[in-house]
Amino acid sequence: MNNEMEALSIVENFLTEMLEADRTSDYEAFIKRFDKNDLEDFNKDIFLNDTALMREELGAYKSRVYLGSLNGFKDDSHPNCLRFVWRGIYEKNEALIVLGIHQKDGVWYVNENAISK
Image 1 (cartoon, helix red, strand yellow):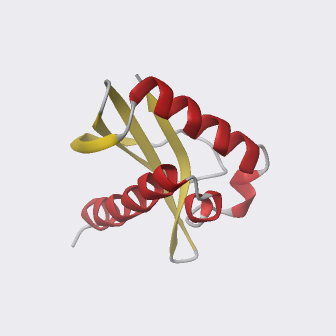
Image 2 (tube, one colour; image 1 turned 120 degrees about the vertical axis):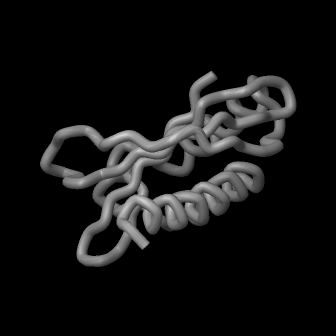
């Protein structure tokens, strides 16, 4: 399995976990796959506010369609980062879901999560 196919399999699992954490407002489950260094400006209050706003604007998550991958940003903090994009289908609307991951010491971590309508 090449690196991108391995990463896609991993990121699909991560996204499933994170969407469930969104649904249940479970901050600890949501941040489980992040490198703790990437959470300095993100806390439980921000998470709960974000999930409440998403539910209000988008409704409940229904499904997703994988659109493709992008190279990550060129910075030293996440070398060889990969970003994956889906069309998210929600109860009230659709949105783009972007999830970035990188590997550090043989472990995959989430370093980006964005949902935009």
